[in-house]
Length: 476
Image (cartoon, rainbow, N blue to C red):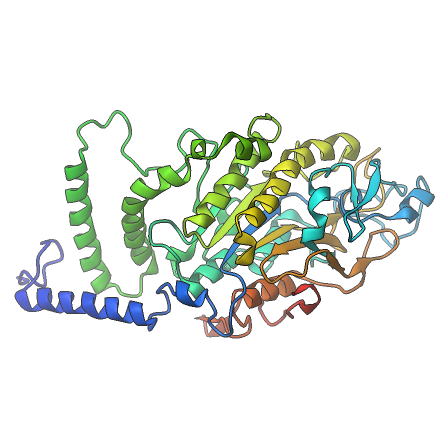
């Protein structure tokens, strides 16, 4: 017969265990204040695990589906000269089609800002902030298939099961605030991207570091945060009592199974959920923003309202202590998405319009609020598109080159690194990969990408695998 201190069900312990628990809590508190615990927040250091950090928080804007670089940011006069010609690119087949004739961009191009950056007419609002952005014009991918490419850009690996960048950052730096999650994901209001939640996974890292999905445009932005309306029998006191009992049972079980990170993550999620019942509603309440701000983000326009709401919510979350926010545009599938296989002239403007004004507003808003001093903005996609036609006016997948841009803390504004060939088919100079982007983001956060590791199956794994170089050309 087990004693009360050994019993797996009874929610009490012996006096010795009880005093030991109090002592452990006090010791943990002291360690946390001194920074001896890896997961304890160190806002006074602004991150900076391996060297001084220039960035404290990150917004990643991920355009799911493969943005056509030669129709947005990569102007190629050669496409206009050779439009309609059959050019031998050494391919018998692209990802999903037979190569057609060279197709020029159907959109007008203009140079903008002091930097003279070319931008097509699909991004009139982003064109106004190009002097704040640093472009990577020769990003490449190892694959032109959506699922593996999306994993690669998020986790550094082509296969599922690896932690994404947000999870690595959460693991490496811990939280800024204990009132909200460290890593938040705001998906497209129409659905999840390719790979669904696999893009936000903690992989083999402790489960507490996976992304918390919030849907600001949904009737219930955070599932199960509060009791349903019909559950009148659940009072504040009964909920507190139930959570206290559940917490005790979970901790007793965790003590017997200390290696189970899922249970530890569940305990932390319950604790965080209790705090979020107070903090999250206020953070998600955009009515607190003035009318001019809401208008700037496009909340009054149906075509920009959903993505604008996500961008404004992202800014509010960062202000309140979330370290990493990932905002997605595009769900899985080729319709009304960035995956423009059939009709670039009509498909691309729809999805581009939905993000253009909100993203430009986000950049201006962060600058006006002084948040550019410690916030990094990253805009990217999983691969680019081909210079020749698929069908009549579509474009197929192309891992050979695509465009990414960064802005904010630690970034040299108005510059570009690398360039594609004359057709925007392959990277020609200054080639960069996801490993280089990830290494650069970690570097700005004060982390040496080669030293942020986790032992898994006998291998010291890292976000950048065995690759990656910091892109110093775009750093201030």
